[in-house]
Length: 317
Ligand code: AKB
Image 1 (cartoon, rainbow, N blue to C red):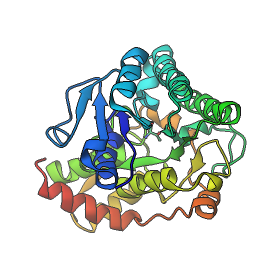
Image 2 (image 1 turned 180 degrees about the vertical axis):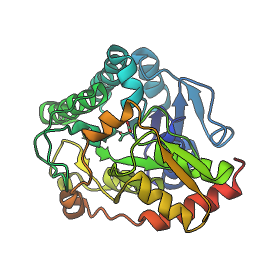
Image 3 (image 1 turned 120 degrees about the vertical axis):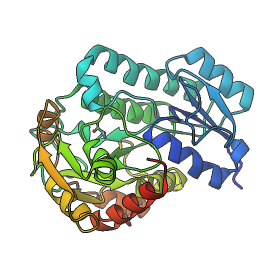
């Protein structure tokens, strides 16, 4: 087991639940303290150390870091794209303040590493939409995207100015069965599996040919840990890395589900999230991540559909 003591802020969210479990396998259960503003997620209950912590409460986080001898922090708490548009100022405050105060704590307490997720939302309508490169035109139009891009720049700044080892990935839409997403534009790609099993029909809030970059959670978790474990000299950018696995539309995911549930039906009622999706890339070029720290995805659409349906069938829906 590696000698690190890890604190996860926002462990009750879609990424946090699975990342907590995976990090405990690598570093040992007692060395990974999960925290969230709420009571523990049912999957995390009784699974290891848990503390209620608000990611905005710098003093409480500082105390926890000192008390537990924390060496690494993963900050996963954030308001996502769709929720952020409903209250832009709140999204900016939560997404930026939680990061900036953690970066300061990282310098002050000499943390060995910090992880902070970015997103494909950093890109905007003026970005090339196909095979979007690592470094390109970036003009995000959502407050979530603006906060993620500003956050990337702050991470880079703290690295260059104080040598803080902050690492980050630009996640595409993440699809998982253990924990639900909340407030994202890509959430339809999770809801559709639940509805296919429960009602054999789904109304998509994105139109049928809206292509977005997506990834199965297993790949995202493995990629995150591989990024964090890679030697520092392999980090050739201190902005977040593009990572990619697949790209599909609502029509294509429906067709993939129909291979297992032939009478599954989909219809379309695009809402305000359509405009957000229309400003994002359709596919991502992640050549740098593959070359620098050997990122590789394992799941394509059909493999993910088979896993999602069989795992959700086995879980209590
Ligand atoms: C969202 O849809 O807001 C997120 C993301 C792509 O970062 N899933």
